[in-house]
Length: 138
Image 1: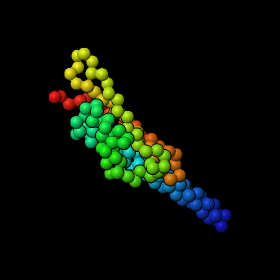
Image 2: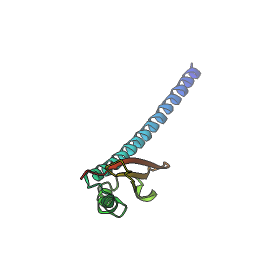
Image 3: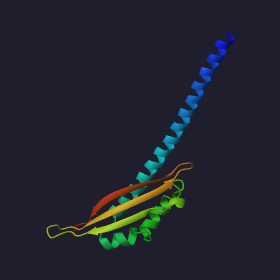
Image 4: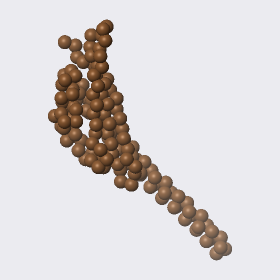
């Protein structure tokens, strides 16, 4: 009878340890999902700021390139939103002007935003957003 109680206690202990491991994994995955959604919000916020600006090639390059005032304001608003984002690499913004062609009346800018972060005890992560911003009609 004592042996049966010890075996039952061993089986119960293994089950509890399994549940603790499952809980730890779920907490880690929930934090990773939070970081991914924060990166998406950051990138969407910058595209929104670009969208409400003039959207001409020169203004987008001047305001939202890595040294522009719009980029700096955005970066200051999101400072410390993601762990390790200052250690891995700062966010990068690439704005490429496309030829509007002979038949198009508007030019197009392709924007690429890359956001990096590194959670404690995790590998570096990266989120890249690609957006197309048509120039406004005059």
